[in-house]
Image 1 (cartoon, rainbow, N blue to C red):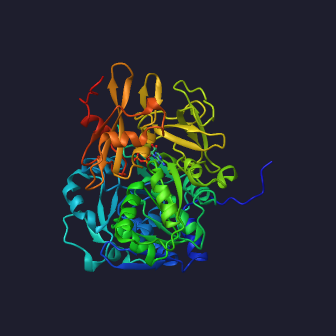
Image 2: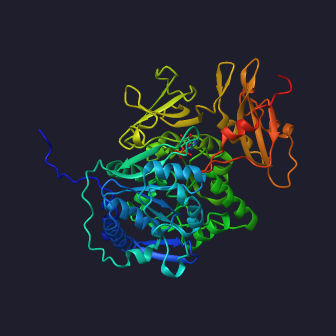
Image 3: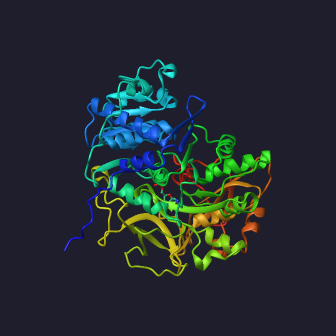
Length: 542
Ligand code: ADP
């Protein structure tokens, strides 16, 4: 017997409809790419999204076509995001920090027909245009007054392009399983691969992510997504904020410490989210200026491991709660968040930080397991490392155009390529990416744990650990350090600082100092480049 409930397909544009009705005047504030602060509302965003959908359809864009955006977080980006998916097309957020050849590759692979771009990226696209044969028109996210002279094909200023449309448009009633969005993983090995989100997966993921133990956003929150919309589905905040009716503050192109701090304070932001490198810049700025965080309550930190020292600083010095999060493009992207369940809620001091160093527990909709290399499940004892595998309605089942072949195991789990432990409470601790874990004498050493510990030293700006071939142990850890400006710290000082805080056999065999550690387009330490750089490195006693 079937239930007698209504069939109400989970389509993403219902989210902006909801916001425009029930949170109509809630503000969306942006630092515009042109410069000034721009204010609009969810109701106005919806109207412009409708015009965008109308204009795209007039352009010949049909259900399932891919439409790219190369843009910062702004209200306009939000308008076209909903406009694209609202006409049944697929928003494809392109990361402008990728190498130009990678951008050309993914735009070609996705067969993007229209490309929305911020002013910032017009020069980049002009150089690249020859290599983007699928793009029929470029729409510059600006108005006539700021529109530059450009050689880009059929280029038009966005505000002009939609000006002729009235927004009298009915969203396309696609199947809830139809594609709505797409994002390529940055492809640390091989070419980037496309992850294709559906309307249903986005809606379910955002609802799961909004739970109190997860992002916990409410209509009283003022949310600033610093994490770009082009990074891993924007951590689903473009859906979560309007779904909850939170005020939205978009930082545009400026993500330095001073600019972020200014917006946090001037707009009364209560919750924000980004990768650790952003918070490093903010904390440095606050240290230099003596600035305060007077309204911020919660900062979500993920994308790479949040160092303990950062959590401590936010919480003890600024009274801001840190929520450590883990996820990946393939998971829409949130996997776990480290809110404190009753078993941990009363912990204080170091014991609390010990838990917060973990990546946390998943919401309903995500199943997890850790296995050995043969696929046998491993115990949840907080100690045993295993390959982390996940299953759920917002987790990819295969990559676009079948790249990478079959990616699920026989039980339908996706191998995250992360290695971690799970504790008795179901809290995940990521110890490494499977290719970065250091294999010493048949045991595994976590490069992330060593890095987190080393950055706790007051003279260390950044730390990376890679495995170096060793005749006896197979691999041993090399600690690579960037000193804070003007500091003189030496190898022995750092190793002394680490001693006693980890097992002796985990201690790095040597420390190398560098001026800079290379980063990927999403702000992560680029271990592949470091491994090339230290390819010929030999330990002196090996
Ligand atoms: P890309 O690989 O393209 O940079 P993703 O955002 O999809 O983009 O990367 C996901 C990966 O980032 C995860 O598989 C994991 O290795 C790493 N990661 C994300 N969050 C954390 C975290 N909190 N701690 C440690 N690693 C993390």
